[in-house]
Amino acid sequence: MLDHIDKVLNAAKDKSFAEFNDDPILFGAIAYYTMVIGEAAYMLTNDFKEQHPLTPWRQIEGMRHHIVHGYAQIQKDMLWNVVLEDLQPLRSQLEAYLTETNWDEWERTKFDL
Image 1 (cartoon, rainbow, N blue to C red):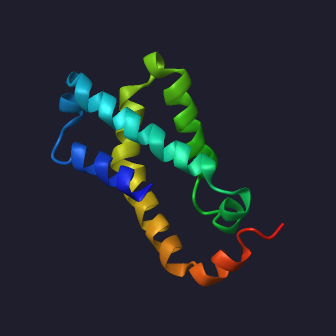
Image 2 (image 1 turned 45 degrees about the vertical axis):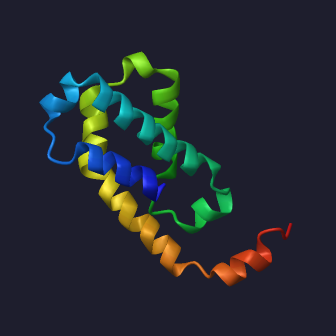
């Protein structure tokens, strides 16, 4: 997720909404990487998402579903707003989750039922 957030943020860096709106390649790339972020969120366990309720997992997954199933109906201003307002805070949350996770404990319990 972090890698794809970085790809979106780098692609959008120093761009205006007008540039985003008028460039189908930029729009397509940002839509694609945003979809991948949502797919990665969808693949997380429910237990992980429940342990991190401050992250809007359902909205992230919903954005993915909207892009995949309603690509022609994507509101560019809404997607641009996600880039400007939501991705950097999400990135910070994910970095914190990586730091606070006890990976040795996770390795021991990941296959426990």
